Image (cartoon, rainbow, N blue to C red):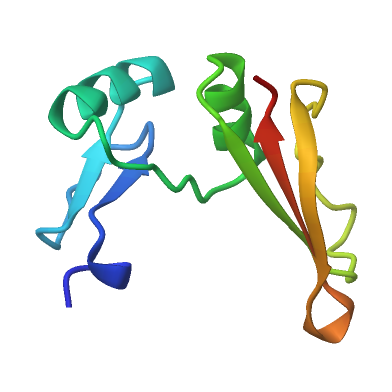
Length: 111
């Protein structure tokens, strides 16, 4: 199997790391540089961004997020970490209840 679901994985880090799998790439690019390079290679592919608040904020600041799938898990982990995204540029297009009290909301960027 080539990564999760046969997808290439890019790891954003400021640390000096080396990938130990052929389907993993380490990048030190900022989000704009990364997306510019990636779009040149695969212009028709969607990108799934999975990570923490800081990574999401860095992509959002460049206007590089078109859809947000937010899953709310009703369990407090310490103080929690604010996502730090504003949803003024997005419309809530779907909301559904999942198991164990989880809720998933889907937002799309306004046209």
